[in-house]
Length: 232
Length: 274
Image: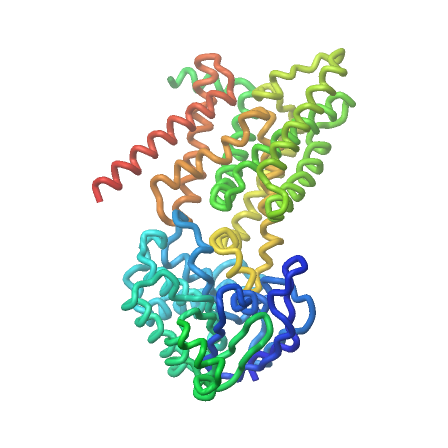
């Protein structure tokens, strides 16, 4: 068990966004969180990351993860269009969570940043401006940054929004590689149900409260799964 | 030219202004990059007005100006930061409200205490004569602290400026560093506003960062360029103000404006070429 959510409830003002959701994720699994717009998918992910306060319930991580060793790929819109930062600076900032009290990056951090950039095919972009890259390239940079922050658990919030189909496919394959080859546990919020079914081991369907959590194979045979697949 | 420089350094008050001004320009430029990128530019403006009110009260009661103004402005900085994070209250109108109120209180206090021969003009637009010897020591100490903290927390400041949510999610205490930035800004503004004036100090924070961002696309390069531009503009402005007897703060802002326009056109030309 790498992550355990127990009775997680989040409310904005008086409106309940996530309602008493409990589930567990095991090491090495690939979980997709699906649901309609406004169903609380992103909020659930943010509550795991402690970006929104819990109204009740708890989020606990397995012993292999301390809180700081999480990787997170936010929705693209969070980052400003004209921010002056090189690709290398962005990727390296992922190493910050293991610096502790030492304020400067070590040689090992820099080597790791380079290694992840090579792995994701952006090694040549080291000195390029982050904001001048295409959407798909930016997502790779942010994925490299997330990998600097973790080798265990990666949380992604709609990573393919706004990408064209070819780039989307490439990104999905990269994420699958990380899952299968490096054994990184993946938890992804997705509105793209057909790809979710293609790649994920488990599906978590939420509409404020938890509607389904289990194997992808059994999800597609449920009424809920069939209906949701047909709609999209 | 050399003669002007020689003359310049023979006046104690100018040497003081030069030392303090250079340090303040450096601090303001470094912090400015983060403030501009976080869309907090107006906080600098708001804080300088609060500083004006605090200084006016301090002078009216014959208190030492810096020890009164710094804590007041630091508190205001935390308050403004809270307001801009809270989406229910519009941050920009809150800043305007606090800024104009502080200005009004300051002007009223000064006019009530006018028997003590206080010059509003020099507060508003700065005065090169404002620095006493003890002010210089306090200013140097504060600026050095700001510089050291900025360098030590540089990587964290970058992370929090670039993507606050990622920083928070991976365990960086983003709110702490936001407060640190606000604190350092508050100190820089209070120290700098004596020379630059209430109305003009915020330009020292905003202009160099904007100029540097026209030309450079890397964070580190922008930070360094911003610092260099700021110090160079301050020095040129000071010399110009001495040579032509123009107001110091205003001269420095005009030099910064010219520098910004140069960087703007350089950036535009480069964009066309590539």
